[in-house]
Image (tube, rainbow, N blue to C red; front, side, top):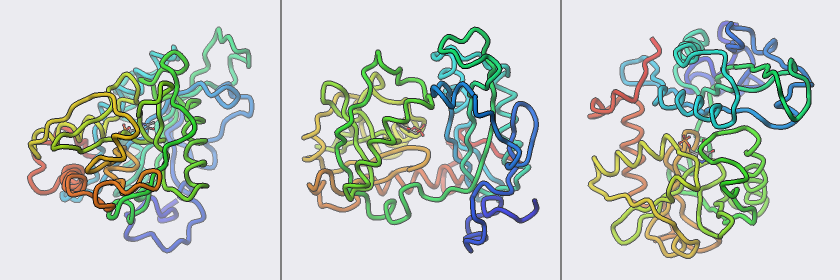
Length: 330
Ligand SMILES: Cc1ncc(COP(=O)(O)O)c(C=O)c1O
């Protein structure tokens, strides 16, 4: 498998486009052992495939100044994965430390310098296909690959155009937002597709009462009148990037962050709007529903935050006080 997949080396050395898939040639940790990506397959009658019961995480590992890759906020991602399974009542046949070790080993065995890591807990076919599961055939996998800027480099630099979706986020008694569960991403997929088909980059989702929640795969922040606002956790995924940027803005940028309900028109008249997420990192929003946000370009606050965030995740420039957030895979 040596040198096969571009994900196995840094983004700089593998962008020739020779590899047909970013996954090909990688090793996957599956149910306690490493297998080749091509052998990491599941049954067509996996319960999760039919009904969408499962939980996952998206974690980034960055190339650092030290020359050793660092996984960003690994413990918090593992905690959220276990919380998701607890909410969904999926028994996990592993301890947190087993999954932590599996993730670190996945980065190492694949010789990644940087990558995106996807641990997933799902149900196999061992308990049958009834909706009521008596026996949970829980399966766990950790896969990883190189994934560059989720919305593109241009989006990070110049901001994106977003659309308020016609699809509402779930009522709290429909799906439980504190869990990052697989099936509920159908809602995000529909919203994202609608936005992209309409010529936008991303979808902003409102809740069933019409208040702003988050984007299809990111939390949302508004900068207005000198304050930062973000919707409270009752309606959104408890983003680990959200939590990180709140700390960075308060401690490094002297900004006060208020967690409060936001209306759609408050977005339109904001000085800045930006999105945060493991995949999207810190992405400025320059336009929503064909209305310019602020000056209609990436805002100063978002760009300063983005730069601080990248320094921290890459262990650069004064990032030492945030070293608690980095797990080096050496
Ligand atoms: C719906 C949704 N909201 C927010 C986020 C951001 O969460 P995090 O920063 O933990 O990646 C994500 C990404 O996982 C998401 O899918």
